[in-house]
Every structure is written in C-alpha cells, then in structure tokens.
Length: 425
Ligand SMILES: *Cc1c(COP(=O)(O)O)cnc(C)c1O
Image (cartoon, rainbow, N blue to C red; front, side, top):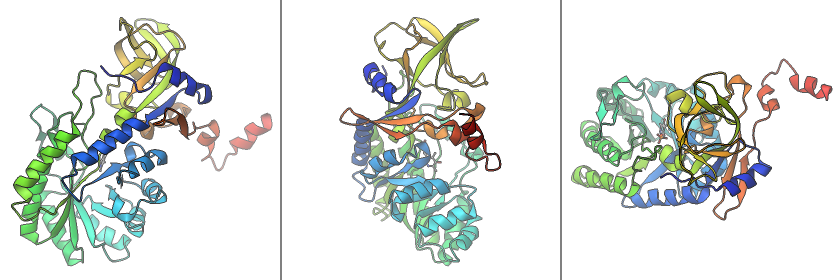
C-alpha cells in the first residue's frame, strides 16, 4: 500500500493559497531518509552523498540536504551556479557532465568543483578551460561496455550508453593526467538506472574496487574516491519492495573489506550521487479533476499535464495515484487520467483502477520529488506549476511560484508582448 504523505484537508488548505496544480515536498520524510543514507555509510569516514541536482534543483530542497553534509552533483552551468550560490564549497560540488561546453569547465574550475571527466579527449579541452593547468584532484568516468545484469533480471546496457571511458582509455587517461600534474584521482560509473534491488551498489562497487586496485598497480595513481553515482531506485509501484539503504550500505562495506582493505587501499572514500532515492518519494503533484469524458474509455481530465510531470508521457513510467479523501474507498473504476497537452501520450495513468472520481476531487500523483518538476517543459505554452514545502511542523511554505504567461514571453526580446497586452487592460 502506498500512502500519500498529505491529507485532503491539508491539500485543500494549500490550494486556497496556491492554486492547483502544484508539487508538494515532505520535509520530514526527506530529512529522515537523508539521515538514513548517512548512517548506512557511516562505516566509511570519507563518505559523501552528492545529491544529483538535476533531480530537483530547488534551492530550499538543496539547502535542507546540505544540512546532512550532502554535496551537489552538477552537470550544467546553471546547476553549478545554484550550488555555488548556496555556498556549497568546491569539495562539495561534483561536476559530472558529458559533451561539456568549454565555459562550464571554466566555471567549474573557478569555483573549485571536482571535475569528473567523461572522456579521454576532454583532458586537453579541460586543461585549456582551466587556464592551462588541471586541478590537483580529478575523476574519470568508466564505462565497462557490454550489459550489466543483476540477479532479479534488472539489466542495463553500458555498451550502448554514451557515457564514460573504456578500460584501456581510463588507464591511459590517468597516465596523461598524472603527467599534467593531477595528484589525486576518483573513479565514477553509472551502469544501471532505477534499480529496485539492494544488490546494485554492492555489485557496482565490487567492479570499481577491483578496477581501482588494477589502475593503482598499473599507473601508480593515488586513487582517493570511488563514486557509485546514481541509479538506486524507488518503489514507484505499490507491489514493489522498496530498497533498504542500510542493507545497500552493508553490501558495499562487505566488498570494500574484501577487495580494498587487503590491497592496502582501505582509506578510500565512497561517494554517491543519488537523485531519485534522495527525493522521489518525498514529492507529489496535487492536481484537481476538472473534466470527465465518456467515449470508448473513461477519462478524467486533471489540471496538471506532462509539462508538470513528464515521466509517464516520455517513458510510460508508472506513478501511483491516490484520490485524496478516498484512501479507503474501493478501486472499482477504470480510468485514463489525462493532462491537457495536444499529445495522446499526456496521460498520468492508463486503465488505472481508482475510486469513483467526482469533479473537484484532488488527486495526488506520487513520487514526483525527483525528475518531476525539473523535467518540466513548456510545450503547448503550458506553464510550470508552483512548488510547496510541507514543513516538518505541519505548516507549508511556497518555495517556487507558478510561472505566469509573462515568464513564457520573457525571451521574445524583439517582440514586446508584455507592453502590448498591458496596454489592452
Ligand atoms: C542522473 C544522474 C544521477 C542521479 O541519478 P538517479 O537515478 O536520480 O539517482 C547521478 N549522477 C549522474 C552523473 C547523473 O547523470
């Protein structure tokens, strides 16, 4: 059973001030989870979670995670700027980009971020962007190729992924970087996405620890950290068993003791870059049912659309829906729940069994806390919604206003729609 973290009364109270749709975040939930992540890796003194900013770049969210000593994992200029503005210092900013623009390396270097190179050809490129001198600590992203499988059948396809360096390249890259004055190294890899199994990090860590020992022996490089990146999943579906971060931490601990400690590399720091696991369950979209339609199927039209939450439209991703106030009612109606975009993929749910929905009911679309708002877009001229923090004390705070039409027109420098419309009022 998946339970919404917000009641109908609270959602209606918020909706009086901040009209639907909006994303709402559960402060108490995200704090408890951040604490659990820290605890799971407390055996590793250098451990740090660099929260994947792309999953949720809201400064209020980032500053809560910062209280747990999280760093920020960035892959673009704006993500770097937000993190810098929030006073994450260089050691707390990981720049894990790919196909990276010159100015972004320049900026990352200026703010002292740890640069994680996606490719061997970026060494010279980055060196130029860093004013001719690479930073003393750098990381390289590894791609082992082939397929990556876990015992529950989860499989991903690194051989088809655009990221990272081959085994030969990463050794070569270390040697070149050492000759250019780099003193300390990290290894990074992201091999499977949204893994709903406790097995992923342990298996990945085993591969990367072995690689670290080999690379150290081959090149003499001083390897300081292993970055397990993201990919730890959450139970979007009610029948899935959520990951247990304590077990995941212990799985990594076990291979650490088996591989790194005997190799004399037991001072290695473990880094993670989780986005989804840190935030997805602690966000939801509150949207109102505004239309019903009875044709070949039964449709409920919500006032949110894929511009607010894109995952169902682009990946067919499952997001659980609770009809607020009808938590205990029987799910005896089959609906497609749609948004208003002129795209048939704009459906939050297809053939979903739900309680009977009345016009005006509030729907809670679960697990929008990561890759939710941040993936939003403006297709059809639809505007992105507000974001609200449901605080630990039960009160709420607006942490981003909804876009207005003027935001949408703001980049038409050569066409002054603002003053034209204003003149009509
Ligand atoms: C997207 C991404 C993450 C976060 O992935 P999750 O699946 O949200 O944990 C971490 N690191 C990098 C480099 C990414 O691109």
